[in-house]
Structure formats: structure tokens, C-alpha cells
Length: 352
Image (cartoon, rainbow, N blue to C red):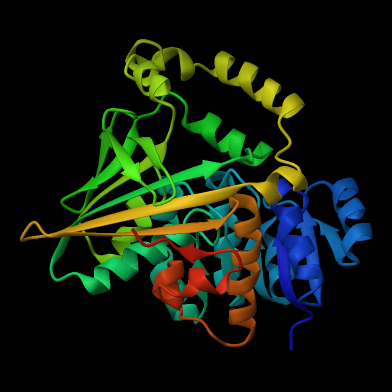
């Protein structure tokens, strides 16, 4: 019997707090972790959970700590800087790993730990939130309905809300880079905004452009479809602006420019407040095509992204604690089927 059911690393970050508060009314024996003891103490006072400040670079202490828990939830982004240390300690201590990552490159890194996780008898599930639970479920649903699917397009739009400090830093890290899509099973670079399409989300038609979204990695794992593109709704004028991005991408990659933007993010971006989250919602669209050229689509309306992430992460953690999991590397819909998203309050399928 382990001392803790769940350790939340990065618990005092914007989304980490939402997850911790979701856990407060549902699961006991939770430990809040991160590097900043003062922030952990403040969150502990609010949730009643114990806390411990720990540095990810201290492998010995990390392993000793994780040996005391059944699950580690990693909410500390950018995940490119945190996933490997935590996953390696989870595998060594036979603890399950869940995170809220949305970075394609990080998904590919985490996938490489799949065999070791299987040997250890634990589950590694990355993308337990807004990116990628709704879209992963849509992709798997359509894949099961279509014979010989060859192409998948996924698009999303948001109404209201905003972004957190951690999300802003992740976006900053990608500035100046090209987007990614999957073509014939391989990851391929493409200029962000090169492709566009109008999408009927059921409640509204929106203009979308191609961009990097987690499904370029995860939907390939979940469905085996070899051609995947992802799109995000934007105002048309942003599309025309992005057409000129090749002119200034070199500038965005400069360290001095990124540091200036990081300072602005640190001072000004904290994330949407509770009122704006409650008023906001998200829309998802997926379109699948098979080798005969037949197409099929599906649509979802869900809770606001950060609320959805907290709810989905805790839902998955509860399933694991009830011995409902698959060992090895998993995506949400691969582990829990396309119906997972409908277990989250505020989700509805839009028929059109």
C-alpha cells in the first residue's frame, strides 16, 4: 500500500491548481509537488493536501518520492523540460504517469518510453486534457465507422476564455518554427497558415488555418491513419499576416527576442479567471476520408479548455485508481474508447 494515491507535479501552475482543486472533492491522499515551496504552501492551505518542494534534477529524491505513490500527474510545462525525468522515475518505481501535454514533439518523445512502461506494468498517458481528449475521441469514433481510412483532418475553435502563463511559454518556445502534419505516416514540416479552410462547426462556420496540434502525433497512434492535418479557427486577417511569416521567422528565433517576450508573459499573463472560463466553450470538428474518396465528419461542443483539462485529468486518474488502465504508452481514446469525452460534463455531439 503506497502512502499517496496521486502526486501532482507542477501543482501551483495555472492548470495544476485547477486539477488540484478538482481532486480536493474527489480523492484523498494527494501530495502537491513542485520547486517553489511558498507557492506549494499557499495551495496546500487552500486544498488541505500535503506538499513537498522537490527538484526534478535530483533523481534519487525523485525516485524515493514516486515509490510512495500510485500515480504522478505532470502539470509542469513546458513538458519538453519535465517529461523525461518524471517518466523515468515513474517507470523505475512502477507508478502510472499522466500529463496534460499538447506538444507534438513531446508526444513523440513520450511514445518512445512505451516498451519500458509495458515491461514495468504501468500506463503512460500523455494529453489528458483539452489537447487531446475531445479530438482523439472524435478521430477514433470516425475511424471505427469508416472502411480503409486514409486521411484525417481535425479543427477546433474556442469562444471566450484565454491562455495561461504555461501555455504562453510553450507557444513562445515554438515561435519561428514551422508547423507539422503527417504525410504517409511521416512527420512533415509545413508553414503555419499555408493551408486554410472554412469549417462548419454546427453552431457556426469559422475560418481555420493549419497549425501544429497534438493529434498529428496521437491520432496516428490511436487510429493508424497515415495522413493527418490539424487546423485552428482564426480571423482571416491573421491568415494573411501568417502568409508573410517567412520574412520575420528568423527574428522570432533569436534568444534576445524570446527573452523580451518571456518577460512580458511573466509580468502580464496569468490565465482566464473563473467567470470567463464559465462563459467560454470549445468546438471540435473531425473529417475522415477513405481510399475510395468517401468522407465522413463529426462535431463536438465541450467545456472551456482549462476546465475540461482539469475534469478529464481527474476522471482518468480515478479510472487508474480503480484498476481501469492499459499498460504501456496510451492515448486517451486508445485507453478508454471514443466515449471518454462524453463522461465529462458539458460535452455534446452536434449533428448537422
